[in-house]
Every structure is written in C-alpha cells, then in structure tokens.
Amino acid sequence: MDGGVGSLVKWNPLANVVGIAVWSFLRTMDVPINALHSQGFVSIGCEPCTRPVMPGQHEREGRWWWEDAKAKECGLHNGNVNGAANNAISEQMVEVADLFMSRSVSNLSRGEMETLVGKNKRSKSSLVVLYAPWCQFSQAMNDSFNAVAEKLCGPDLMVGKFRADREQKEFAQQALKLRTFPTILFFPKNSTQVIKYPSENRDVDALIAFVQAFQ
Ligand SMILES: *[C@@H]1O[C@H](CO)[C@@H](O)[C@H](O)[C@H]1NC(C)=O
Ligand SMILES: *[C@@H]1O[C@H](CO)[C@@H](O)[C@H](O)[C@H]1NC(C)=O
Ligand SMILES: *[C@@H]1O[C@H](CO)[C@@H](O)[C@H](O)[C@H]1NC(C)=O
Image 1 (cartoon, rainbow, N blue to C red):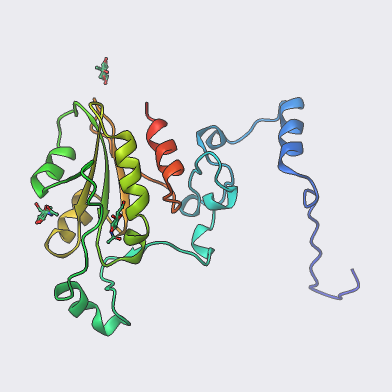
Image 2: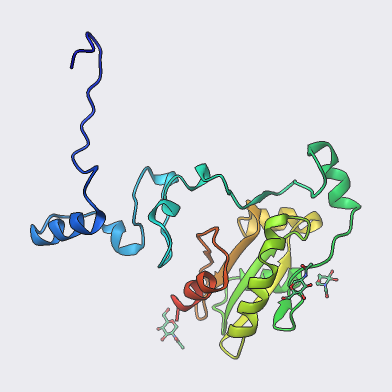
C-alpha cells in the first residue's frame, strides 16, 4: 500500500483454504461450477494448457504440466545420441533393441493401423503405443507396457505397438496425430473414435485405470 504510484496489491483470499473446503462450500451454497470438473478436469486454466487428470494424479498434472522438470516425451526427430547434430545419424543407423517384446503385445503393421483408424466400427478395443525404440521415454515404459499387456490382453482387448518413426512417421503424424514419442492411443470397440492417453505417468496402475475407464 505504501509502494507509490503503480504499485500492485495482491489479495489471495483462497490461499489458505484447502480444496475439500472449497468443494464443500460450493456444494452447500449450490454455486454453479464449470462443467469440465465432472469430466476429469481438476485444475482449469486456458484451453490449450488444460487437460483432464486420471484418478490419483495430482491436479497440477492437468495444468501447466510442461513446466514440470520431468517432461517425458521425445520430439519426433530426436535421436538417442548426444545433441541435435547426430539425430539424422542415430535415427537411420544406430540400431537399438526393440521394445515391448512381450508375447501379449501385438506388433502392428501399417495396414493394421490403417484399419484401426478406418471408417468401420471396431469389433474389439485396442490399446496401442506409438513408439521409437531410441526414445528414452519409450524405453522407460517398456516394462510397464509389457506388464499391462500381460494383464489386460484377451478376447475384448488387443494391446499393440507400432513403431512410428522413420518411414512411418508421416503417416503417424497425419492419421494418428502423433506429435511426440511415446503416444498411447485407445481405440474403443464398436466405435471409430481414437482417444489419446492424457498423462505422462505411464506406470501400470495409471494405464490400467485408463483402459478400465472405457469398460
Ligand atoms: C514388427 O512389424 C514391423 C512392420 O510390420 C516389422 O518391420 C518388424 O520387423 C516387426 N518386429 C518384430 C519384432 O517382429
Ligand atoms: C523390456 O522389458 C522386458 C520385460 O518386460 C525385458 O525382458 C526386456 O529386456 C526389456 N527390453 C529393453 C530393451 O529394455
Ligand atoms: C454399438 O454402438 C451403437 C451406437 O453407436 C449401439 O446402438 C449398439 O448397441 C452398440 N453395439 C454393441 C454391441 O455395443
């Protein structure tokens, strides 16, 4: 208040109020709320910087998540060797071990991916990871995705992988909206919809919760 002309006073009336108290006030007083809250959006900011969170995730994972130091995605052109100068080399020439080799994970061909995104309703649901084996965040989910496949794959659900770098990159960008590796997609049965896994938490429980949300 003594800062002189142009000084700024900030008042944060809710700074010391916990979320549960806010919610009980809203319910008690019957205050209208943003409809997105009932769709899993816990913390709502601007349109492009807001996304829903999964049960058990921190609300901040739904907003400004890229400010989190542990951003967990690779650009489509990144390689696994130091620095950008080596990207072309690493992508074409350095062979790294393939991922998701569990027998429960189907290795999908381009044709099978085209069918999944085609115009016909699917007879079975599918959970598919679009990956590049050189991306460390694809590597980091190798174990959890194998485990999820072993747990969930069956007559109602196919769990698959599609290597989407190199000659498949353009197709994946266009038909599957691939922007970063890894991208996990759910293709619900009896539908032509494609749902992108919204979180960077790729552990077994989070992935299973995601799939079960559609059953
Ligand atoms: C997976 O499928 C792709 C494309 O059909 C093929 O090039 C690749 O060798 C297969 N990988 C394995 C491990 O079978
Ligand atoms: C991926 O995980 C499986 C176990 O789920 C393991 O046997 C395999 O060695 C792992 N591959 C890589 C490249 O880390
Ligand atoms: C498939 O979806 C349609 C609506 O899009 C619905 O009428 C039909 O009952 C569904 N069939 C099955 C087997 O779930």
